[in-house]
Image (tube, rainbow, N blue to C red; front, side, top):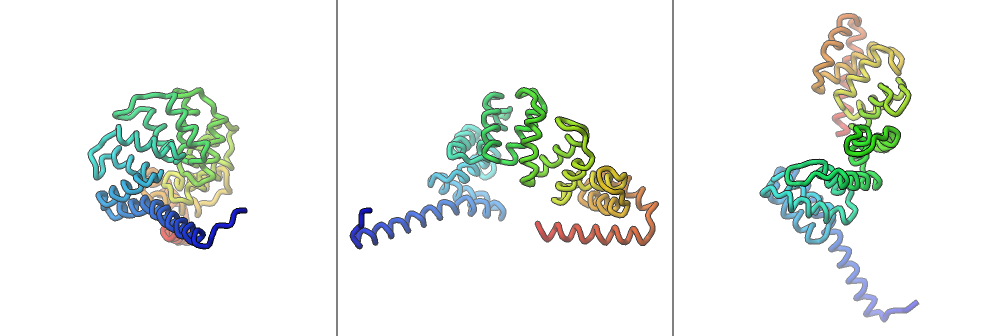
Length: 274
């Protein structure tokens, strides 16, 4: 192994530290840009994303592309948006690859191309992007953009759902409920609706409540049913009202107070996590 003279070693160390500092700064640009967006400062966000893009940061390419696509803080320009997404995708940034796939399904300023859409979405799904896994699975279930393949679709949905992506959890629950690519399975239907419900999804909360009410895939428990239907309605799912009112009429005061207390605690826990 070659031994560098001490002065060269010091120079190399200084250069490496400088490089690491520059890389850290570049990695911060997209985070600073997102922070500016959260504070409703799009012009400042654009400056950070532009700096990150100049530094070759994949995330900044992507977010700057989003700004051009949406026309937030910049004049809408799909050509530039697509170029930025492609630069980000070239660096294997899965969100950009997924976005390119979606845009090729049909979007203003983009020529519809199903073959390209499938290439991009399948690539992003293979990388492990949960949204892309859901999107590609949806196309495999639909059968219009690509050949229908429910078995492959459910494999992708499972991966996406296990990572916590709510739309995939809901679709997987539905597939178990009606038997799409699977045999009907009430237990797994309940399981996946419950996974989505724990993240506060109003429709999933309703489905969990109904299943407790009917003993479908879970032991019947009208107190738990009231709890989840109450939360679902409070979260904005209006279809829960009729079932909630029906249970309110038949439950005892003691049962109602218990259900209401548990619903209040549940919502407090969810808010604390968010």
